[in-house]
Amino acid sequence: MDPMTQYLLAAAKRYIPVMGHISLSGLKKEAAGTFGGFLWWIAEPLIYGAIYYFVFAVVFQIRTENFVAFLLVGLTAWRWISLTMTLAGASVQANAALMRQLHIPKIIFPLQVIVVQVFKFLLAMSVIWSILTAIGLTSWSGLIYLPVVFFVSVVFLSGAGLVLSVITPFFPDMRNINTLVFRALLFLSGVFFESSRVPEDLLIYFYMNPFVTLIEGFRDVLVFGVAPDFQGHAIILVVGFALMAIGLYAHHQLNRVFPRYLT
Image (cartoon, rainbow, N blue to C red; front, side, top):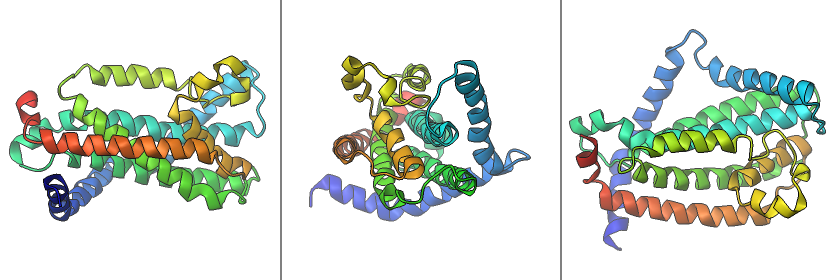
């Protein structure tokens, strides 16, 4: 067994309980910090959904089949994607003070963000899908494919988040760049429109954005009740595992280097 694998296994055995404790504490703190508590995790996408529905369906007269469910599922998936990427990317830098008090693998910080955001996404999406199903706006027939879409999404977001968390301590401007990029990608990832509205000669570039396939995957299985694009998800899965390997290796190599750039 190579040294890196031994290190990762030993660190996992020792620090997974720590990460679990930090994640649980973060969830409790976030929920207790407002009067609405965890209800905000559900209310937030609903509020944004109502705003964007007015803008795109009422003002701009965008007509898409089952637009309410189309928008809410896409927006909830997008908020999970964008929050995971931006918060995981900034997580090592954001915990500089804790690093000076405890000697723990810095990889815990992005992984903790990923765990928290997964929990919040599952809760929000479950409630929203249940509401939409109760009023007849979703389908049960595609649920069998949901684990595939969810697993691919978690792998890709974990890999990308780990890589970003390595880059940001050495290039602090990455936090601002991430904010700007994801603000732009909100309108370039098919959150508000179907891919059929994209000119045919631009589709190849449109689908170079992996978030398009992930968002469409959740809509396919939750709203339209059909199988997702397995080929697209397979490519994203391979890229996600590659990013995870890069992120894990980089964290292993730079674990003791991070504090020098954050003090």
